[in-house]
Length: 106
Length: 200
Image (tube, rainbow over the protein chains, first blue to last red):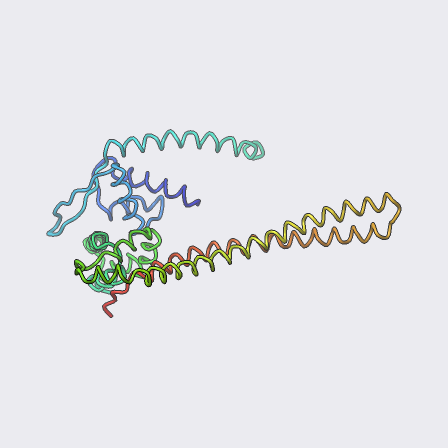
């Protein structure tokens, strides 16, 4: 997959993983795993980028006698998911145009 | 590998990056290992699932901007004394010009390599032009009745056409390789500054 495209998709995947409830690093990786493979260092970079862009906030909470970081989606993060859905509709209509001839033959 | 060993090696290999950045990354990986162990993995397995330190370090280096490394490197470990500042200022005609010269040499080597590639492309373009000219001249001689010269011109034209096609693919290959090499070099230069705090 194209690197730029994958990067954008990973950002949205991470946002989607924390959309319904706050989540932590390992859980995010596990939740996304069936759809897209992501290494720890990639996730770290994405979380940093999303935090800088105000799309999520971080809080540290105690868990089982140690500290764990939880990530919470912000208004801006939710907006990004909305934008992605809109963009994807456009991409799907382009996809249909690109594969038009193929469907006729099939 | 045990968790502490893993974290210690990672810390040593990242030495040279901003301190806060290293600390945050270590906390992140530590949490990742703990969460795996909580799920029932052994410490060794949890660490090995994170991946080899080498791979992690090169991925981090590729992402961290060069400026962040330099900023951390030139940050003095302590306040400079007055006489050191004076010495630095007095010596600047020497060390500054040496530094500039070193950079200029590296830059010119890089530019020279690129000009070699540009000239390869130019040879390719000129043989393409030659092939057009040859074929055109072949027709001109043929119309004038010089069939033999016309055929010779046609031959030359076809030869140059073949040469330019070969050169095109060759140039594309060389340019691609060089771009790849540039990326590798950037990574190499970054590693020169990072990871020198090895606690081996």
